Image (cartoon, rainbow over all chains, first blue to last red; front, side, top):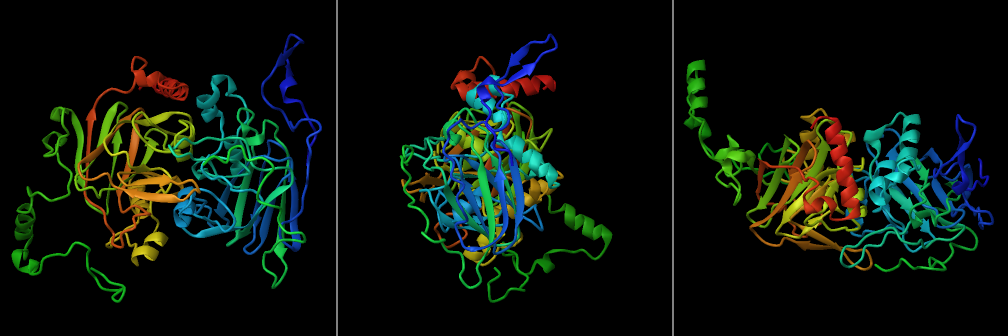
Length: 272
Length: 298
């Protein structure tokens, strides 16, 4: 999977007159040279059934079999992994933010959170998590919503909604199937007066989250390309997706050394 | 009322009076027709009022002649309507126990629909209140909150599912005593050719929830009887409403009161309205909305 570096700010397009036209559209992988990358490893022991890298800006999807555990590695740190889940056998049943939040009575996703469907049923469970809390309030960026947030000049920036639509199309799904999502490694505090927004992240290179499939689940991820807010630390980096069949009898548990402290080096957004 | 001990009992949740058989002479088509026609003209506690201008509950300062929708929605009931751009929509909670769960769609292209995440994120505010836009995922304002005497609404918990109500009340049948909001949305959506793929997270009004410092969702409940919330349709809207108990309502029973719904002809927000430019995000959302509507000749 491509992880080459491209300087997004210097992307240009040829013009018919032979010159070049500067573009603000990030092209390809865009993380800055020298970015520390930690490719990590599965958070739970077991036989690896899938191990893939997701390039910056790219979508990804896979079916995770019931009982298997998906580890998502935040390779470069503070890289939002926008995520949707579907019942693989009946994709009209899909991830539901409000059902997940109402059943657990809490607005944040942490270890133990059951990720529920639109029918209130468990799709996946967070079995290990190396940052304070994960987000499922902030939704996905998109070309259209970016115009509200940053101005019409960003209309042709890439967005997670574009990734979701492209990947959904490959799976026989479409715009009706895109709903509010999870944002692994993104930080969206809700303050006492209801103020809510995306602030600096709490993750770091190599931080991980692990989710166990409670049924056969189609997992769809957009490696967020947003360059107008701190959800990717203004430096989109790769993700690593590792699926394991947990060791028999052992159940999902931490690998040698255990999960790292949930406390990240910096928690500027921990203001809730 | 059906109980868990009598799962197959045939009993409606509104207790029918006994001896109904004796009140009707229906032994021929003529007598059945006369019997049916004799039932007209009665009033119920929850019903639509037609024409809307004849509503017994017309909101204050609204010209009854401008009304296009007047209805009292039963507890555990649902309603739905297609509204023109520029229509005002008001919910009244006469008892303090109403809980309208709301979904909005662009009536012309229902794949454009309420996006709760954008509705919270783009205004930088989790709690609904006056001037809060209800945004679609396409960067446009479906509706805006133009009036609110309650201040207790919820955009976090969505509505109830069958699984939730079966766990909480032991029954979630849509025709039973504790229907789920999703089951009612499903029926309302079906009447417009939509299905469960078309049901995103919803909003609810009059039963408040707040997020505590640790993320806990704290129930605040109702601000009391007599509160209202008013919306303005900024696009042609398909409106789905399910009036069901809030998911976090801590009361053991399925408590929900009747909901009054009124809508009347007015004007969409325009560039001369202070709301149009109240914030940079709202301004650009309105620019997108007007751009769409003008191109479509609306």
